[in-house]
Length: 281
Image (cartoon, rainbow, N blue to C red; front, top):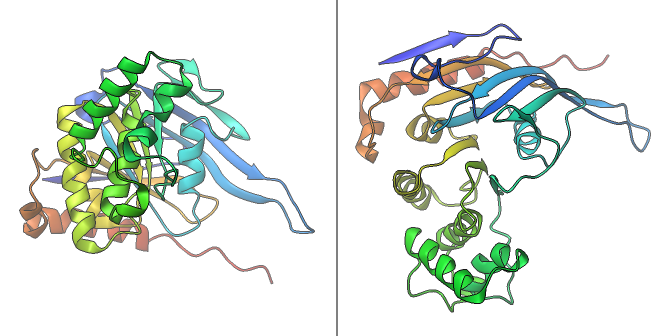
């Protein structure tokens, strides 16, 4: 039910079912160096990293704290340029943010003076779309994430899970092809987090998108993903891939199966094999 694939530094990840498909995203020998500042040495956040993301896949990225997961996700979103290497979207160089890419951050970051509906409508308003279309699309995506009845509520009136649903809706409203998620449920309690994972799967079934998610939670990664990419300590690079062949749909009960436990252990073992970088002496 599972396969673990150790990778050389430059090896491209190609799941069998997608090996003949055109990648949606190609990451080729990407590195990121942060310049020295305030008397500190330059930081090499990412070592040479190469992998592919295929249409319709859900990829989870895990690894030790500080290994460059968020840096990598920001590069995939066009929010940060690589120091070396390149990222392409459908074969075209990614040089900045694109409308086809949606990004959900760690915190909801809703505007407190706007209602839920107007927070969600903001990306469409910035495109100067007709008011009727903005309202229709905002209400459609509100229904998709299960926030009907809260259109006129303000962020302070929402629970943590509801706020994250609103943030997800704000990203989905412009119908991105690639959804990037940076630990979006990390601040939620365990029960709410599980419910949000189920919601994410439900929404993905209703609205087919490709997703790349950064998470520190191994069970979450296995539950959601088609493939889990494990990164090394900084400078981070992808060193292992775990292919998740659990069938979909995936109820929470899957987490109690032997297959799920073996997959989670494979990911955990891959992380544990990463050695702490030596301290300068």
